[in-house]
Length: 151
Image (tube, rainbow, N blue to C red; front, side, top):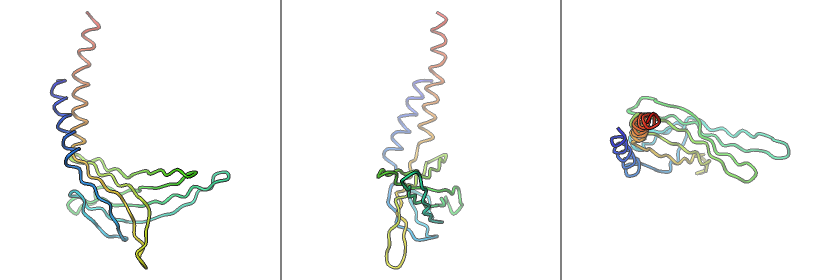
């Protein structure tokens, strides 16, 4: 079981390393762009300011829809914040059976007179396979650990 798990992990690592699709998208509202077989659509932008003590936290939020074969499979927000000079990103992650889609909002730019969203999008295949291999390894090790304790 452990050996099978390690083989499955290696397959997942190879898939996620060599078959990853990554690009930077410059998008207008409701525009769809394709990355690794998934369509990404910019649905909304928000710019809330949160005041904390003597500082303000500026958050830039991009709301994205993720489509596969024309069907909406996920929707959510990816944010980009500046807190005391530090930049923090919170990605939108869709965990699918065959691939994970990671959308990192990077902010907005302008192409006069149109606002555009900038996002880094990665489609990483094989993550479910990688996790399945890890589970097989753990399942294979547990009986070995229990059996050794009895001897």
